[in-house]
Length: 423
Image (cartoon, rainbow, N blue to C red; front, side, top):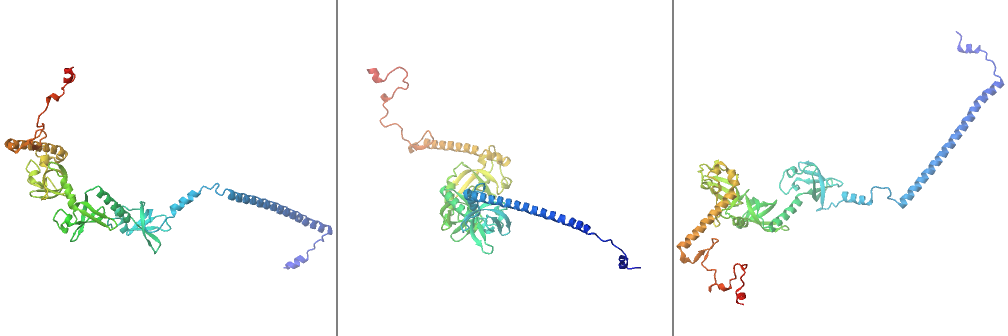
């Protein structure tokens, strides 16, 4: 088989004329000139557009510059006042002793994390969460979402976070409350939590106050008074010296002054004995003897009363020197046996029955005084219309009355005065 070169060698191509070459050259040269003209036109158009854009940007720049120079805050919603308000919100004094508002966002076993809008969060240790001793902040009602006022008491150098306290603020409020109660001469309850040779320590309004033994009405020791509540009055309050002195004796004296015979008081059963029940009436222990519980016989006191029961009792007698108070619910029964069958009715009618009892006592005393005068006329005493025993002194003057000076009882009878008739 002949090679490809030998096959092409036998081919004969006709010659191309010069006129044909001229046509071909013309064909290729015409489109090139047209293309160049199109490119030139497009470049000119782009240049014009860019020039217009530059002019437009220049005009916008000049307009913005003029607006900034003449009215810089025109169209700006964030005013200068808003800026100052933002500074007040997010910029605060972080010095120790400064009070800040914060929101608790997380708690753990040792305290709570608080957002006070500072660069870093603040921390409230559990020992600074309450004036009382607690193990977890939740015991003081501190939970995520709670917003409160705190006081800065330190800084954690490890992470630059602030240490907060609620306890310090609560102490300030407690001292203020104690001063207010002292000004009102109020009687408060204090729980005994400790003691020493000189007295006992009682907690009042979250503060530890000292009660000297000389200011305790009973002869109890510190161990006997531990965990008991005592009625107290304020003797000395000194916040600077952190000194709070209280008196149980003054409180007891004021309470006893209000224990009138026949008065009704509310008490709590403290203990039961075979012979009666001891009732706490405002820090004073009174005895409700078994014979004074009801008109009906009470064989077992526990079937009527239990320790912790609240009831109304009437004061039968009060020995201030010996500190003994005798009580009765028997005198408050509307009908005999109500204290056993329906004690609720007895307490509802207590004031009414006590009022009747006092009236009977007053009548009995008046009769006794009258009998004494009847059998002892030489005593020189007499009973007034008000039932008061006093000296037998006449209300009339020694020389008697001049009846001529007494005006007529009725001036409408047409008669004149003695002087007018004589005229």
